[in-house]
Each structure stands twice: as structure tokens, then as C-alpha cells.
Image 1 (cartoon, helix red, strand yellow):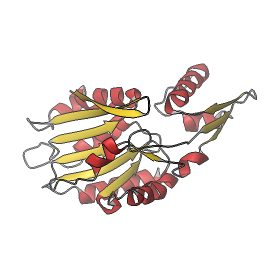
Image 2 (cartoon, rainbow, N blue to C red; image 1 turned 45 degrees about the vertical axis):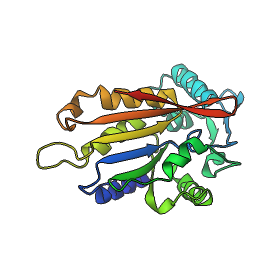
Image 3 (cartoon, one colour; image 1 turned 180 degrees about the vertical axis):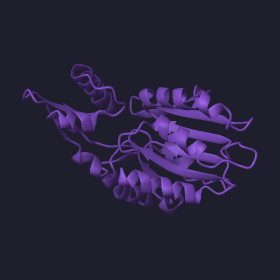
Amino acid sequence: MKLLLENWRQFITELEEPIKTLRIFDFDETIAHTQSETRVKAPNGSTAVLRNQQEFEEYMNEASEREGIDAFDPIDQLVELGYQIDLSDFSMVKDPSEITLVTDVMRNFPSDSKTYIVTARRGNSIGPILDYLDEINVDSNQVRPIATEGESKGDVIANMIAQKIMPNGKSNIHRIEYYEDSQRNIDDVLQKVCQNENLDHIKPDDFELIIYKVVGIDGDYNLEEITC
């Protein structure tokens, strides 16, 4: 939580009036494919190795339903119930394979924009992620990372829109480009941004949210465009 607050302080400080576009990138399966695994031991002694995001989401959804947990990211609550969840692979960038369809876009930094990585990883992954960007010749000095620390990405992006209000009562954010592979996260952002009545009065009249869903097909990748 401390890291998330520090991320927000930095965001508010940097969000100057000329910035009208936020470019927001997920990391895993969006910027790079990694070999990261999550190892889980449940209180009943059963174990599981979750090898990709789909397996991870399915396991966490089933465990949350079984335990009566209603949270977007149930990891902390499951740990309190005795689940041993090993996320150590996600404190590093393990055996990465660059998704150039996305990173080629990321390397260009429009002058009226800010570029963010918003990752569901914990805060100890931020350094390795920025180091990896430098390794693939993406200028990490122009990228700001936010580790959501269990908060949904939809809530994070909605808060980003609301942080800078101009004298006319509208947000200075006119356009958001969001690159993401997880349909669960995409649905959450659509709900929290497009369908959020609390944001309607501060959205500029020309506000746009454009989501580029990263779809992997037989080792290749495509972008599917989704708008409000």
C-alpha cells in the first residue's frame, strides 16, 4: 500500500496540463511473455502450479468462491486463510520473450502523452521491469510504473482520470490507450471507466478510451481494438 501511495504522489506531480493522453501498458503477456509460475499450497494440503494467467485466474476465482471472498485480487485474503502462494517468480522478469507488436508502439513517446506500466505484480517487480525495458531499448526514464498492490486496474485508471481537473471542471485526460491481454482486466476497465456515472461529469466531451487487447495465436500476436 505504501508503494501504491508513492506511485499516486508521483502521478499527480507529473500530470501537467499539456498531458492529454495516457498510454497504459500491462506487462505480462502484453510487453513480454515470461516463464513465471505461481505455486500454491491450500490449507487442506493440496498443491497447484499455475503456469499462465488463465490458470492463475481460474484457480483464484474458484478459491475465492469456495472461501466466500469478494475481492478483485484475493491473494492477501487467501494468505490470511492459510493458503501459501509463492509469487517469487514475479519479483523478476524470468526468461522473457519480447512482444514486439506492443513494444514497437511503446518506443514512440508522443509529446502530449505520458506512458505508464500498470501491473498486478507486487512492488518488488518494478526494478526488474524497468531494467528489462532498458535491455530491449525502451527508454525506461519515460515510463512510469504503477504496481496496483491488489487494486483493480479499472479503479486505478478511473482514479487517474479524476486526479487532474481543469478550471472548466473537466479532467485534462482526453484520451487513454490501454494495452492488455486479460479479458477480466479489460471488462473491469470498461465497467469502471466507460460505465461509471461518477466520471461522466468530468470526462472531456471528446474523451476516448481505446483498448488494444493483446491476443496470442500460435506464438504470434494480434491487437484487437475495443472502444467505449
